[in-house]
Image 1 (cartoon, rainbow, N blue to C red):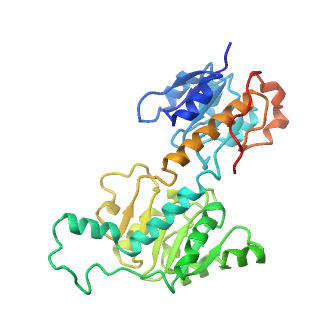
Image 2 (image 1 turned 180 degrees about the horizontal axis):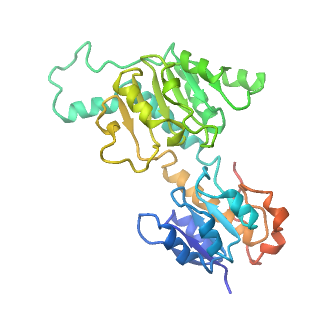
Length: 347
């Protein structure tokens, strides 16, 4: 008998094919994510679940899933999973960090350029047939990057990707991080370390690349927004709640900062009455940091491989809670005997 797996929404086909080769698969239909009740009804007899960032995998769900051996999330973030509860129950967790580094760094820098040069605003201007003079010396003036300062909050994989992309634009790059890089790494990336508040005071552009934790929740609040320059631009492609959205809206309305590029929000999708929707000095994206075909396809493959590896009694390529092996060794969760790893670890 094949193991049973539940996938909370249709993912790129290569991931589904990998799992379906070895497991009986149930896939939630439609674009909208399943609610808790729906997940519980589908997971009671399942050995594995492949979920997405929008699925809350909590204690109630795990209590209902007595056969569950592995949770594989197709995401780099994992705040939607009760990691401690899963670990205590001997459930392995796989995730997909590293794969989306380049895609998210590309998007962050795209937002930075687009807000600073008012690209979306200019596009709307043309489409609305407001372009009446062929060339005007003060039409839609933006900001230059060359000679300015970019501050990167969180110099992990994605933050380093943004730093590398910044190097060709003649900017000064400063950063803050939980752990300071070695002098060799700083020299290689051409970056200088700053404390967070000092970075905000000095930067013309601030780009956020930190996980959402108790420590980082609303790390950019009203007080810190007041430290930024009046012509500064804030870019957030990390998690919505690292920024106090109400404070950001207030800062933008009062023109205490010049603009923002936002891919992530405190509430997703945004409400129809969100004031950000009416602002010209912001660019708003629907959480598409990793949204290119190559990246999402690779994420689905790694998520599938993480799931199958645990059922085979092997460590996941990307393992979130290795301490779980002390509670339930891999030998005790092994139920697949004909699985050979097909996905290479390219991280």
